[in-house]
Length: 431
Ligand SMILES: *[C@@H]1O[C@H](CO)[C@@H](O)[C@H](O)[C@H]1NC(C)=O
Ligand SMILES: *[C@@H]1O[C@H](CO)[C@@H](O)[C@H](O)[C@H]1NC(C)=O
Ligand SMILES: *[C@@H]1O[C@H](CO)[C@@H](O)[C@H](O)[C@H]1NC(C)=O
Ligand SMILES: *[C@@H]1O[C@H](CO)[C@@H](O)[C@H](O)[C@H]1NC(C)=O
Ligand SMILES: *[C@@H]1O[C@H](CO)[C@@H](O)[C@H](O)[C@H]1NC(C)=O
Image 1 (cartoon, rainbow, N blue to C red):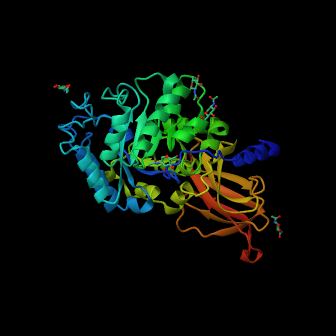
Image 2: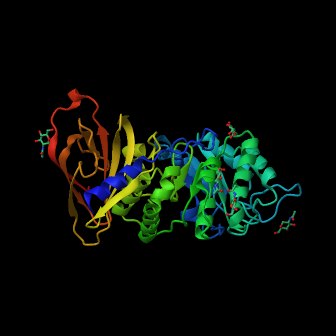
Image 3: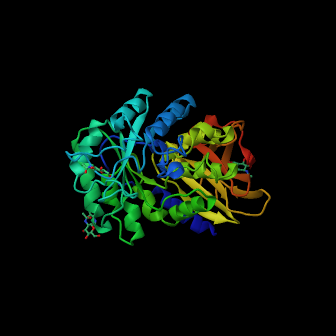
């Protein structure tokens, strides 16, 4: 790729932010937590899967483990139910009700339990006449359902888009958001609206989406495979010049859940997802069985520095800048900044399938990192790595494993005296 093309791509990182956004004071950084769907789906067979079926037991156990395994300390604090918690019909006075066998104590008691652990509680519904799995939807009961969620002390609502007309979503989703707002209880509002309209080829009004929702799904469900992960981030790269500008504090594009800790992703691929979800300013929802996660995967999920990139206060969604020899370079502008200079998170993602690690060489200049005082650079997956000072003309040599990633944090140096000695060449190797 030519140097001028790289320059154009990089300048697109700095598109001005949209100013009008949902004003509920929530999700000022991408929300984090745990969501049942990807790993547990609509498993309602509690006799064969007592620990995995959609039941209050699953959410109680998860809340316990989020705290006892320390995930809450890293920011994973929303416990969110997905589909299949409710009955197909309502109470005589028109209220939603939980399945009595699987949630014998009801949703309010479950929310109370989650709150007692210092966590927040989220619930699922669909804007249509039924949920995606055929349970009661909110259509025709929007106001009473918003009130019910507030009475149950829900903190987060994921609203899906099955069994409805996609053309009407630019009315139905904002309307439900209005009902949520009118309850007076702050609830994060997660909308699946853009995905359903994108799928039908309808032009999504993302200005309206960002004014109405705290986060939204743009693309299909992530599935349990590396191919699915690649498909999702390729699609986010394809659409980045349309989508990325709508991300910011309080309003986020959502590429869907983390697969880390489950069956499909290798260690390298798990780091790749964690790195890219941080570059993309993506909501970080695990969907995994917290009791069985191997320690090295738990370390990826609990990497404080990677999470710090994800939670960067500027809220700028990063982009894929270019691809060269099977290595993709992704960058996200982050704090601290000075004048026109940003700090950056930089991910080198290997799409190579040849079995040996690949040496990729570049310079900060080529990445448009031109801060005159240079940058303090750190390898975020190597906890033992030292911070190195590099300048624009320094060379970066990254040795990247197949399907793996190297994620760097480059903080700008703002004072002349901060520079001791800069490196002309910096070698980084996947660990
Ligand atoms: C709800 O559905 C169940 C079975 O699916 C039925 O037994 C019950 O009568 C229904 N209740 C109402 C209020 O319609
Ligand atoms: C909603 O979408 C429909 C069909 O795509 C369009 O005709 C209408 O103008 C849109 N309304 C708003 C408020 O964006
Ligand atoms: C409701 O919306 C208003 C106006 O945007 C906002 O100031 C307020 O914080 C919102 N309240 C809740 C509970 O979301
Ligand atoms: C999109 O929504 C915004 C905000 O409601 C509105 O001002 C604008 O006219 C809409 N655009 C289209 C094409 O409907
Ligand atoms: C980079 O520039 C500095 C001066 O800013 C110089 O000291 C150094 O030798 C240069 N390095 C290379 C590799 O050209």
